[in-house]
Length: 164
Image 1 (spheres, rainbow, N blue to C red):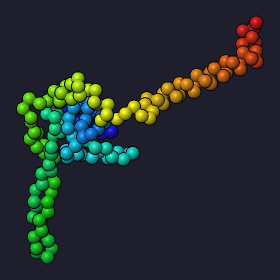
Image 2 (cartoon, rainbow, N blue to C red):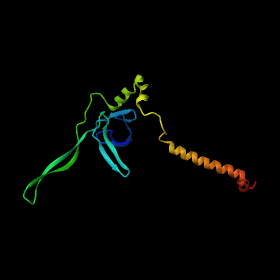
Image 3 (cartoon, helix red, strand yellow):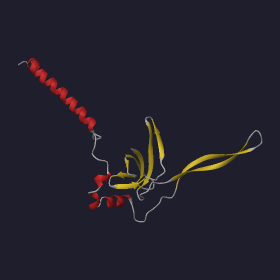
Image 4 (cartoon, rainbow, N blue to C red):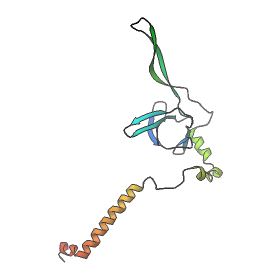
């Protein structure tokens, strides 16, 4: 999983989580090519996550660079030392493919004859689905309730409670 900063306009963005598969990020039917992108790293409590800066009108992530200033300092010995001081993170001009947007890229990939081939390249439906844990918890709770109900009927608890 990766964090995505998706710019919907020039001044508004959404922070999303998405899976990177075969060098592309899919959000809805839109797709961005991120396999050769420069990645920011988000450090968290449980490790690190890659962060991609995506924009609504280009299929490539926003590339960036760190601007530095060279500062000259005099040492006690009288020599000058040049120190590179990091100033700011600067986005570079994004690459634009004329007329190609993430929406169009998603539509092209989902064309009928390619759609039939998509299951060969995508992650298969192997293993457990991601939302299996709530289902397992629900089944365990239902099994315990069923056991208590059947044991209660067998022992006559309901007759005692209802006064029958």
